[in-house]
Image (cartoon, rainbow, N blue to C red):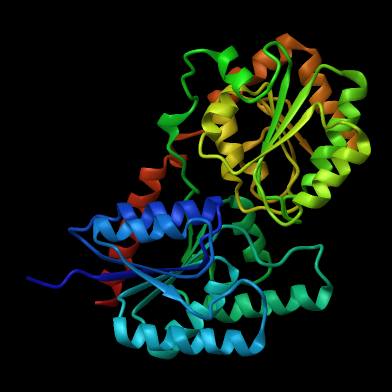
Length: 387
């Protein structure tokens, strides 16, 4: 009986985010009768304990000493050497990388050691228009080099696909669209007592609620959410705002809330595992990211039947349809963002119409189990081609 192909997933660090959660889910749910499964990642992420728990389902988990998100030439060289040694020892048939740093170092190591099949998933790009020009050009150049070492490039959004093609990153013949999946059956969450749920969060029973779910990091731009809340409260003083997530910008966000005097109306809930239940309480979802792949939280919100207002960045345009299931606003336009949120809060009929459209706008292609099956078939196809 032929040995099962060895599939190794590599990600920089297991912070709490869509790319990380989907990678963990993929590694766990890959068919063990078809593939041997390995996960390698840098240390120090919030989801490290969940990775270790995968050992119980037969997944080999390898914490890496040197792989880290921050750029550090000496440490990055050591990480590259560490990955080369890992690949020479483990001899994976498929190396599947995620996130920018792991994607670059992992594909270089795979090329050096001769891994048979190399795949990279773009959950978003490591470069963006707000970086210094030389930094952005460096990242694009590295992506072009690493794309030549890749047998397939997976995109979660059509926008990222188009951008990569326009920048000459890889050959479109190697592009594959596989959506960042969610457990669609979990949305919308069924609440036994909506009012009790709101009270448990310290929210008013009959107050309109605006929710955002994201990291408190520059990419997710949470300070614009706070500025929007302050503007909306001037016109709709009974509105309440909840931000689910945490990160390095929390002190700045807390300081701005205090400076604006809106602490009685804005709550920072930190990371929670009951986001589906919070979305079921929301009247409007807001996302102020400055760049994205395809935001998982937006998919979850729309599937929950919550109309959304978001900055029109990257993959947001794949699913947010202007005037149908929400509104797309140019990044940084806080006044218009606020107006759109107010419009939805003030018009019950409009909000109900968009809520119904939102719930029906998420296609089955976003199902997380379908995402795993699509990756399995990609592995099988590429391995067969190699043979």
